Image (tube, rainbow, N blue to C red; front, side, top):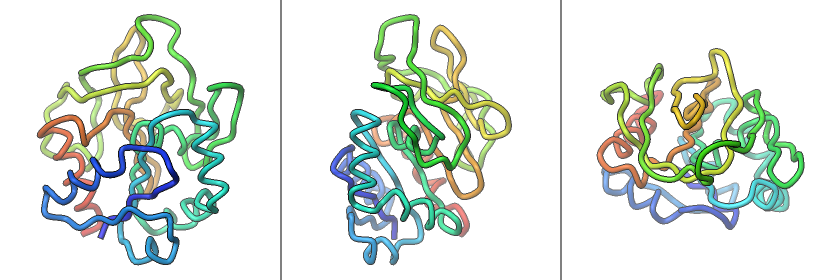
Length: 197
């Protein structure tokens, strides 16, 4: 069972539908006891970093996520990926969950938000098993992860090269929306569901 963490923001139902399409089971919940019964967790997100972190904190889900990912695979999607970072500069500097080092910073070139299909290169994770280098995924974001080094498991070019997928231990994050990215996005979700099995 995959637990989709409900903190009041994000494409919760579309992620659930993608998992169900693949034959998996998923529950949307903010109830820690219910999420405790899940062997995978997804942290989706759409909207403002500060508002999202405030919602997570108010529900006690920030500390819960940090605790659970010690032994449970966690996938952050879009804003959910940015929550995994140390901090974000969106609307002032705000602390993230600190699971992966880096700061979410705003694009300074091109049309903002960066929206539409774009390729992911430098794939180096089981999350991308069976997916060709340069495959296109669907993005909608104004901030990107300023993460470097071995935590970067995928990169994308938009006026600059940025980390479009990151990982550390059981924690994974993708800046694109796999639930909106057709067959390739479904393969990312399938691969995540297979982690540790």
